[in-house]
Length: 439
Image 1 (spheres, one colour):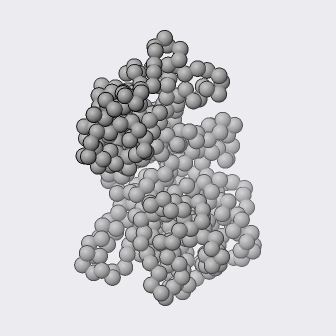
Image 2 (image 1 turned 60 degrees about the vertical axis):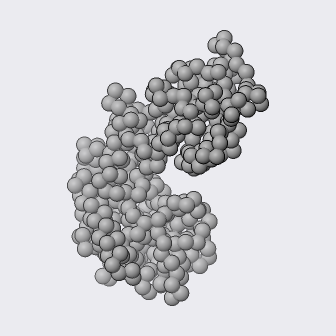
Image 3 (image 1 turned 90 degrees about the horizontal axis):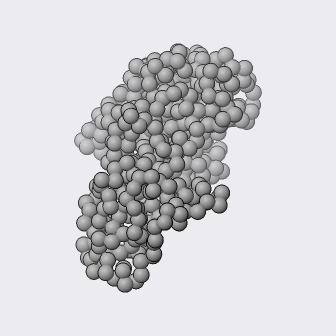
């Protein structure tokens, strides 16, 4: 279609406005795509970038992160680009986005594109402009680098499907954890309209995988999967509610990632948390840690939290919080525990758990061995034994362990470690002790 966007300002002025307007959208990581340069185009999704976003294998990927437009027909209470806000407005044309992407890429500033948008006139009109942009990038400019694009809820499914064959990853923002919260914060949006394109993208990915088993050169649909984002801290939703919704999205929609965005009161809404208190960044961090446990450590949301304990302890990480509330499982003997139980030990990650399982087939492990394998002993020492011995003679007590795990927050105020003040005598194990443990 022909873009009907009047030239309001220069491209660089638009870039300043629309790059700044995109900063609150956090779901812009790059991962999972294997699009290669076939020799006829420019760019690929395999080479390392220079900043900002990270691939599944840890590579740093640089993305041009912009909105197509910050014009919007909606009036969401949390959004700086809401219809009733008096902010500078701008809209790119498809050719301008293509030109920016290619020029930034040629200068080695970026490795790919993250393109989101407000709603210009209607969901269909906006999504069609986005599809035109992606089509020109892929066919006219032969850009074979990474593209992540937002699917616009309410747009024609044919447009969503078209974008899926042009992009590496797509995302649809859930916005709020509950349907009630969405109605309160975004009165123009409906949960069903958000979930519909999510389901379409999921089905499209599954169908495409079946096609690729039959036809190796079939066009790829959204190869890097889909993701979503939730705003946290704007409403009194508990961590348990948020994490349960995330778990449900992973189970029902096969999402690659759920992103959590700490609420910033950019509109000065007096009925919402005040900006002076700052965004809940620590809470956002704990939710990301818990999300990692869901995806890689075989935890479930109702293990980490319950209706009776609906929020995380901000002082310690979620795995340690779970461990101190389930001390009946500890201490764990690392020389005999199964892989699943090793993953539940604070301070033991996926890599170190695999190393433990592999190494102990050749003999008993010591604490020095665990340290070399990457185990964080300052957290793990309360929960493990090697050869039946603990690193220190410590108490298996929830309050005691929590006080020790959080001592670093209090050391700056000159406070002594709890185990220095509770009257218990401790000594570091000698080499003879290690020899006994390893035998």
